[in-house]
Image (cartoon, rainbow, N blue to C red; front, side, top):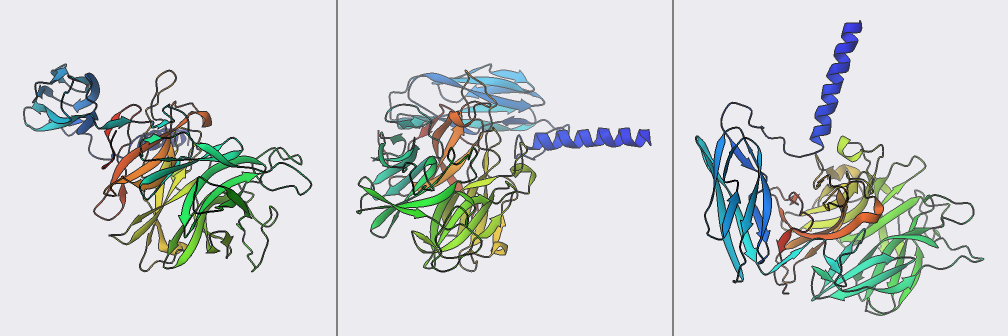
Length: 466
């Protein structure tokens, strides 16, 4: 029996190690340990600025290889090697608007592999700046309306908004509304303003946000966090706002019901969308079990939820139940009009950890019912994650999430906005705003790629100028 127990213990340890490794990459392809020679690169293309500099790539191989720059302005160190090795590619200053070069890696019995280096003046780096400075901005929200990008963010006990003609450079925000103070009426929303989102619906603007009563009546945690809505007094998000109250996020909706902390449940990160003339609210919520779910309800207007809530997603998969917590949060709406698919892209795992990442729920826009959980399909794995495992003072991307989506200035490209944590042990105070172009897979699902690095040069959104 002891031998059997020892064998099972060893077997379970090996399985656990394999599962842990699976969290580090989505690449389940053959590692090349078949005896056949192979050469692989961790990147196939890189964008760099016009200034002279260098970048590092990683060569994975089981044989001798040679690296050959195909352009005079590129050089490689070392230019040959055997096995796995880091290689530095250097580039000279570029005096033109844009140029492209290639470094080719060859080995006997292997098809050549290449990395394309594009050098351009029309680049930016992440994190994007706020008022000209690199600064934290958790739960970033940027929406394009006409020729402008509007940024909406929490600012202490209030909501701040700015307008910019560029996606990659946020103008300084100005506080437009603040939470009420404690008083005889005991407002539900006096503390912890989280994750505001800005929408232009009809001839008004709306902000959805979360707040609660932590610090009052002996409340020490965040159990009273609920969702509320603001409405602009005119058709101008930079003007004055009015508080339209709490939204009903409970199980027992009745027409005319007045939302209270007692008849609703924990509700944060609320967003909204319209499909076939019906508006919906989607948010992250939980009851007393602390399992955060993606929930949905219908809306009769932008300020009123008109049904009991329905649960769409509960964290059950290994990649969304890490760090001892079960969290689905930060739902964001993404639509693929061409393929007729609507996605709720959500974040999972604790937002203060390096395991924070994105996944999605998918609905057929033609035949699916948003209120029917069976009509939503969850992604088979997480959809977007990067973890460089860097610690201070080395900056990196160490978990990412809480996203939204927008378009390039000319409307031809799809872009994702999200926050990334600077250090692997950084926590809530080290979340910075990133933007990045993404594409679509042949089946209509989004392809977010591997995630941009901290300080990595990327080509400006199409139609944006410096």
